[in-house]
Image (cartoon, rainbow over all chains, first blue to last red; front, side):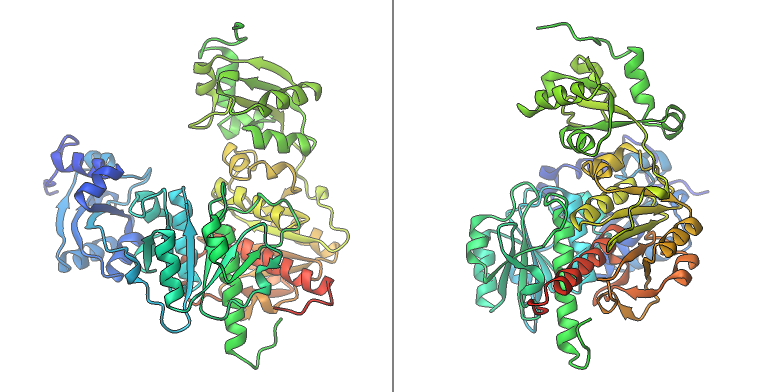
Length: 276
Length: 276
């Protein structure tokens, strides 16, 4: 057995990793943590450079872990072996997988969104819970969305819970963060229709044309979409609910409308198919 | 200021409450914990008798809390006032709302499901995460589903995280727990079509007739639906995903298919409406 590079939980690099759980520390360092096999695999696939990869081989779950370490190393990562106790201290998880990377925060400016072709964008306003944002990213990826536009967030997209709940799709679905006026201007300039979801609408979401270039805007569970988005919208839609109205979380509402867009696009793209 | 009934965190009743976090203790006591204003309100609306309501008025969030305590008391609950420190110990939450009820576990047998009329049932097989089951209940409630049938669960529906993630819809959507053979037999006897969601299907979920009496079956994220359900199904459907296939969680998949059923039922119920 080889001696790990880091054997003590009081090691300065372990302490620095723990500090990255704090948003201010992340913002100052312009760094964030990517933990887990699937997350790191998607980060490498998404072109993220892992600067440092802390590894604890005793915690590996399978034979693929070592291969991932080789790929990260070939991509320029410094590989640091860590004993189990300090690794568990640095890990954000109950059951760490022995893989914890640090990367530079990437550009999330609005210019990053590719709105060519027939874009399908998810706009998420005022999302508070990192888990909800992660689920939205994951669902937008499944729907083949062009990107997720996070406006006026109260959560940091580099929060470890976003990375985790997104299963690493944070790195494969283009994510942009901006203010409401800038986001609306960007969508309008690209000819993307804004479809605002709001309980006050009368048009059902499946009654709107979601096969055209469009951005589906959802608000927070607590406050809904802001007036600015509702007024700027080309269509205002509601998800008809035969049950009680507070029973859909924001990520679920986003998924239902995104997959209605996928349905409409499949049908309009294949004229031979009949609807249902 | 009045002296609370329980002032010490080592009080035997506080210890008993903490023990109810453990499934074996819950099963033995046939009791479970309902915490929070919204959850307790839905429990009372769902006809649950709160046996004991532990309250900590210092933690109340608003003026409605005291009224809820009166309703619970009128329904037969013993009201026990608790000082803040022991209440925080008993609470399952980071930010307790000062309301924590204990109720008897209710009947979850298959006979409980009402499959008359044009039922829409969600079948959830092998769900591991209490939060996922809670989200499914919440979404099924929004969709106006007739019930949620939990088969071969590895999670306990009386887990505090199910109560919480369901926002109390555990008490308003009929929930039944059973084995796969019993569940299939129950659905068949009632003439309810089984629609199995599986990545191996070729029929898109929106290509199946979900306006008829049907049960939408979803499996766990890790293993998918079992062979028994796939073979017993009248229709096997897939949610077409332009993106990557592992990106929908089980609750999201359930919500997307349930709301496609809501869409189809709205259209078939209102012949004047055109589709889209």
